[in-house]
Length: 390
Ligand code: TRH
Image (cartoon, rainbow, N blue to C red):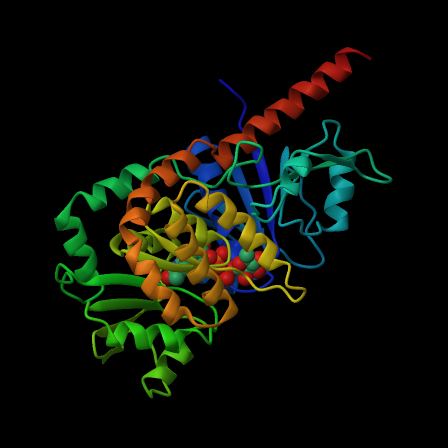
């Protein structure tokens, strides 16, 4: 029987839900699908509890869905380091923990799991070692990404099967809409989910939807864009459960749901507006057209990141579809005229609908958790070989 691998996964929540979203997903997958003993260290359990409502943000230690969740506090407790140590998004590990790693006879495999990017400089940095300046430890960079030259994307083993079952089963879909307190939308209604940051382009988009011939049902999970939604409809206190209507547009505000349930929303809609990192990946697994609001950075480097992804995503589209996607995404991210760009997008929707499932299938060939564990084993073999050679 093979030995159980212990994994310490460190998550420093910078803001929002992306950091913890990625870590929680990876932790569950490593524990549930690969049998690792995972300890997830989180410095903001309040954010974690939004994704996993059964968690108690006041506890130092608890078990959730097969994962030991620990508060990352200062001073850091004295613990035995795991064989596999993952620092999510390059977060800085506690010094006492690094010292303890250096004391181990068999040194842990220390991996910096980086942010997702489609930029090609990533190819040269993926799997690069970085020896510690003073301790006998090496940290390795691991980059998620969209091509074979990267570590791939987080994808649960059964996700695409579950998605296809949902899409092929109207009873399941009906049950989903009922769980939202709604009837299944009538055929011909365009169903849109809208998860985003504050965005000045929203009003223009709502105007176009409201004035259009096609009925649009827009589902908005509670979050940063909600005050603007309320403002559009003259409501100073928008909240989950509230619905609005103007012309052909109906907006329904949804509660923020536990992480596993967010996928159903993406599957149930025709177009998904997403943001950050994790929801953007989930929208791709949904096999539906999507519009990405990238996480804005002060030095505007996010534009290069956005363009790098667009270059990949649009490479197999017709010129018209490529221009329409790029036009809408740019306007949405620039907080500009998304309403006008929407019309061109509508014209190419059929092509985008057809392309999205095959795009997901292609990405699914590169599974991040699997690659991470292969890399862990590879480093172990490399070290054993070096010891034999001494
Ligand atoms: O929340 P985000 O904007 O996260 C971020 C962070 O800002 C982070 O600092 C930054 O580095 C990163 O983006 C790029 O967007 P993201 O990544 O999509 O994370 C949202 C998570 O919330 C994702 O795991 C899905 C989840 N979610 C739910 O669990 N329930 C919900 O109802 C919704 C709408 C989302």
